[in-house]
Amino acid sequence: MIKTGKLLFASPTSGVDGEGKQQTRTFKFGDLQVELTSGKAYIGAAIAFIFSFLSWELSQGVQSIAESSLQYANDNALLLAKSLRGSLLVMSYSSTILSAFATVGLILLAGQLRSEDK
Image (cartoon, rainbow, N blue to C red):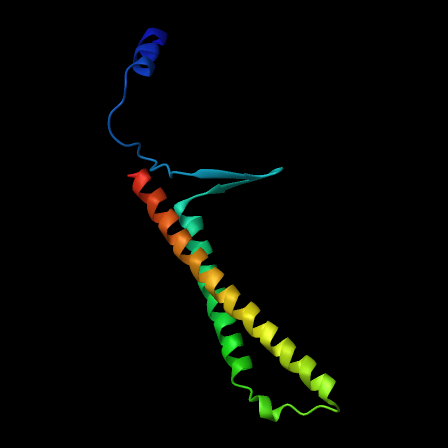
């Protein structure tokens, strides 16, 4: 029986395991080690899409406020409010773009992991 086991172990196998083992990638960030599968990549893409949508809505809400409606005690406060509004718009649009790129990248990575699995 041991001899048969060694022969089976030494011979190459053909076909796919019944388990359907998923292809994983391991990323290391210092001491942190993360295993990424196609399912986790799709979940991450969904989260990035939702964050992108929320960032877009925030930027649209801030942009819809008319500058003429801003009323402050003096000109310095008005200039500060306008500058903070502009920086908030830049940050929200940039986070929208970055989240959209992350969504596309994670979907492509999940597709690649899925194709390697087959």
